[in-house]
Image (tube, rainbow, N blue to C red; front, side, top):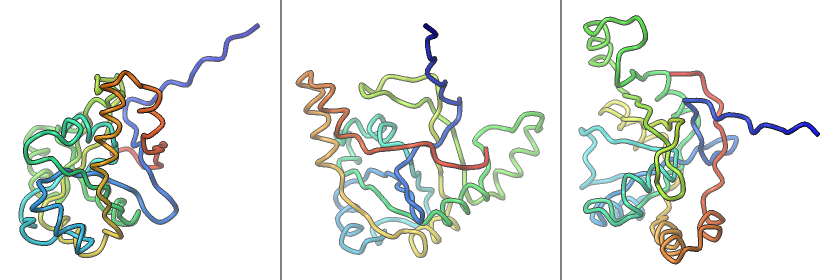
Length: 194
């Protein structure tokens, strides 16, 4: 009998919740930013448009970053639904956080300075937030991209803090299967490598 091998996850792969029109990304904030954003269904003051803001399609990477919504300044986790067109614009107008293969440092610095979006690939996380071998994308939106994000791309914002805390509670109780069953159903997202 021949054993079937599990396909290897590509080193760089966007995994996300998405449909034909939208993709979900995650951000974590203090309540003083999250509450007005939820009420307005977009980011409004005191959110600052002139600062770079990072969006993450991976729920578990967001949990790693915010410690299951327990870290200071990241006590509220928001699932932000944005247009796939906006997401495509961000990827098409991005610069990697390190030089591309064969690119000089000076050329990369010029490209980075001119780019409205920064992309970096960090190790994806498992349910226990341990490091995996493949990477997950983080997308940094500079002021031009933030204006598009806030003004055009966002279609809905949902508070998923209770979900994050429920999953963490199951993990704390040793109920790994119950925790896993609550994870958002992410799947590979079609994109051109950036």
